[in-house]
Amino acid sequence: MNMDATSYDYALTLLSGERKTTLRERMEEWEGKSPRIADNFRREHFLPETQMVALMCCIIENGVPVYNEKDATLKRMRGNQLKGGEIKVSPKWVGFAIPEKVYKNYLIVHHHDELGLDDDEFEKMFDRLVEGEKYEELLDSLFKPEDYLLWVTWDNDGDNPFPSQMSESREKVRNVLGLDKIYIEQNVLLFFVDVDKLKKRNGNLFRPTFCDADLGEHFCPAPVGFISHGITWPLNLNREKYSEEEHLKKGRPEAVMRSKFLALNTVEKMIRL
Image: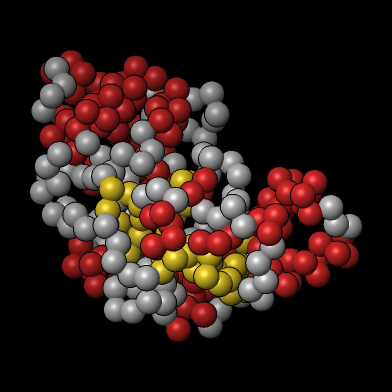
């Protein structure tokens, strides 16, 4: 995998002349519908050429991906998640953000029997959980669905995954991490995860690719030639004026992982915003 050039450009050289023509037609259609997502696809360089060629062929045969669970191209993308290559993270902690309501609903659905609490009891338990209490029923499980893809971040200059200025408001978290607007409309939980404990559970971190982003318009591939990890493109920066130099300077480190490796005993603390 040559990450000094985009996988898109290299994979394009492996297609026949007729297929190249069809792909270019598809890309023109895609740019008309979702210009940022199409641009992200062209700029991808963590995804190996083999997967990129297969995805291109799927686009040629089935059309550009759409938000439809039956869409063959979207299924191909999701089948290529976690293909960006494993990364080595040195910080003590990595962190991720999730809407509080989403996590509450998850606990209710997947841990109702173990916890056996009524609504009032659950709310009290949840508050204590956020405050740091460790519940035996949750120690070995935090997110049961194995296919839940998590995006994590960290700080290259210290142990805190979230610099102090990011704790001021949900809007700052949303902007700096490139999160969807849902994160500004409700309370957010910031999870601090111990990297050593994560590794003991075989929890690996991977460079994020276009396929991990799942048609997210806020995703922006790391600049070509940068291979250490992913980097966010903050939402409050204008994509129309995008530059790779600004990306490197203002972006936050990011990686992707599967939620099945997380457990309550890997989480050092939670912060509610």
